[in-house]
View 1 (cartoon, helix red, strand yellow):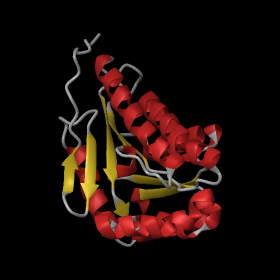
View 2 (tube, rainbow, N blue to C red; view 1 turned 90 degrees about the horizontal axis):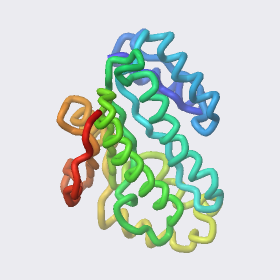
View 3 (tube, rainbow, N blue to C red; view 1 turned 90 degrees about the vertical axis):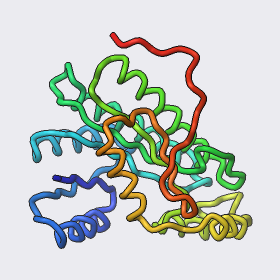
Length: 237
């Protein structure tokens, strides 16, 4: 596989590339500095990936923040950029538009499947990612794009976003409830990133998965959210 890493933080991006270079050949990865909330930067990043590797097969929209104080920014990063990244992925990968098909994986959260009293905007964005991805997956199937779209909803993962809970500039009016969130972390458990990567690989390799919502928790591992079957079956063109 060849991997392009996007991050607005150049130091973090270079560190991630160096970590991959330590395990694989350096030419198999590229880092592109990009603010996903900037529409032109994001489009330009996709163009650079195509230019560098010659093709695009998989898109993972993974940018996310927890900021209830600057909630407009949270919506831009957690939801708007996911929608933009999805449409750009479809533009380059869909059959009938010069693409060979592919896979798009949008990262949501267990907070997208339940209320989160102390993170209402974060929760809303993650609900939005699920609703958008399930819907666009149906549309892609109806239009015969050859692109599968799925969502991953992890529980608490040991990444820097957990540190935002202790910061007033992130939690805003909900800062005083940080201990309640930490109690939830103890109850549900905190996972390490390799388990999320395992779920990612499962979606990439299983051609039958489209419009699915994968849940990953410390207690149950990888499993899927069950929904009632639609009362109608959308017809393909």
